[in-house]
Length: 140
Image (cartoon, rainbow, N blue to C red; front, side):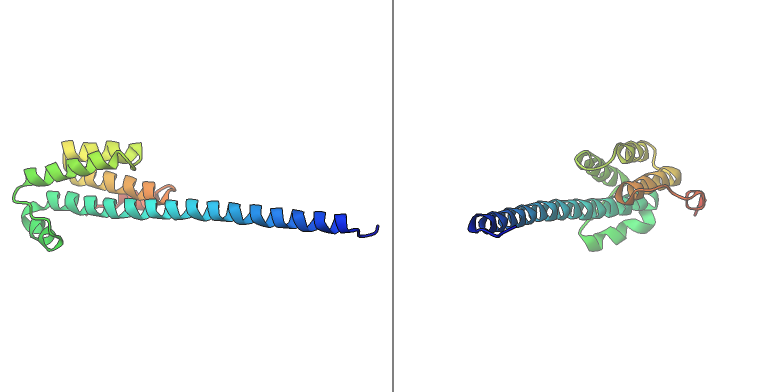
């Protein structure tokens, strides 16, 4: 087979188009990966904040002063519950159904059990996978 100018130009054109397409798909993939990472970091931050407020609600007299260093000054448990409700409404945008249901149960009846269930569903939403029976059986 002889290399003609037309064959060489065709080969170079295909390589150029292939390179351009490869670059385009790489950019699209990187943008999606970046958006996923930002979403994951946002959920992580919101869930940590919510867990701290839930834990404080369960031990209000002992822990409420600890939130002041984060600029959160709650004078009553009712104020804290209202803030957790606001977090629930915001979570509608990003949380799984399981997290929303478990957090709703905690708001209705705060307890160590509903706290644990909500926290574990947040963990599952963030990182996926099943929880070991050992982890689910741990109590304080």
